Image 1 (cartoon, rainbow, N blue to C red):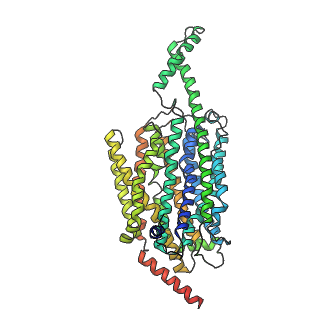
Image 2 (tube, rainbow, N blue to C red):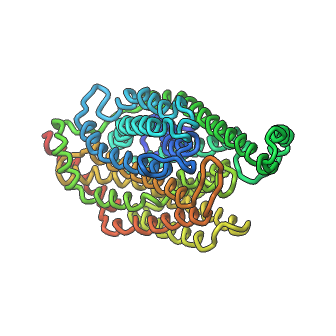
Length: 535
């Protein structure tokens, strides 16, 4: 690719500062990281509810239904891990190596995060042992522990990855361009997983999925002669009832076998994605260079917390991110449940996520222009208000007719705009708050600042998984038989939570004060102070 084009794309200068090769390597590392993040974020809940049958009727964990237990686990584990982010941010700020403070974690954590990802999908437990109650608690506790450990290990990899962007350059335009491309790579990486995994799982577990289908009738016909023969030795029993009972027994066995097949498919997918992702971490490590870090003594964790609360602009971003945790619930577990149980084709989950991509890509391309024209703040506010309106229209239109599905499909394309803008601008704004903190206190605190971005991501994933599994329970979905008691409930929960979240996350940003002009002034003052100090 032409170097001139790449320099223009990233806003870099030939031979000076960060170069396009580094920006691309940084983006490739994010691409691989999202293979791992997405297989866990989108499918660990489905692995538990559908492959291990915690979502089947009658499965109980500690006095609550299996689905509710999984929902609580997803929320509790992510909230717990979110509070690890400031700790990891402090660790990053204390890190001093010949490679820098953020970059070495790409090398150190590639293999550990890969191992933990595979362990989360380890197919050692049978679905039947969960369904019949013989090992329900043991399996739940094992997966819960593995998931919590994975979350901690992922934090150790994720916080320094995003912090690295502030160490590559202190130019807000260049950094914004690098983050734009990196987020596009991340989106594509996540998209590959969300499109192809459900297509694979859906096609390989198709038989005996949905109740009262031709498969049931074929099964009855196939085994009717055998059932009648059995009845000869047991006169007086209603023949048709006996046939149905026989078929039910066979069908239950097939449903459990289907769940075990699904379990192995998820495991194989996890292994393949990990094998592909690990080299990308190492490539990102090898081809980047840190340039802007603080030379001061490493701060304590307590001191970092004080810095955090001095950074009021960052706290507004965090509050907005927490309030926006449910804005994308349709693209997490809830969307997969909708495709699988309402549309009866889990491969359509890939279509749902793909529909968001065009709007997201357009938004990614427009972010630099929007930031320059309207500032990051007003771009963020505008797209989320727009997203709330789009989701409100989708709610009132509904989904139970072909033309309604077309309207909702258009809505998903439009929802890609706030999703794409949010994915890029939030990282760029946090980068600006690092400069704000240095301007205000003399300390950058990249680790503690970007730890807040991973906190926001985890809150979003936690809320998305929680609402998704909760909606499954509210809708009365049986993961074993694929029966749904109240389809509308699933739709209502997913859409209403998104509407509220879209509007709510815009509110804190009205109080955000960093503009592009102010950021440039802050950087100029910081450089002037450093120049004066060296004289």
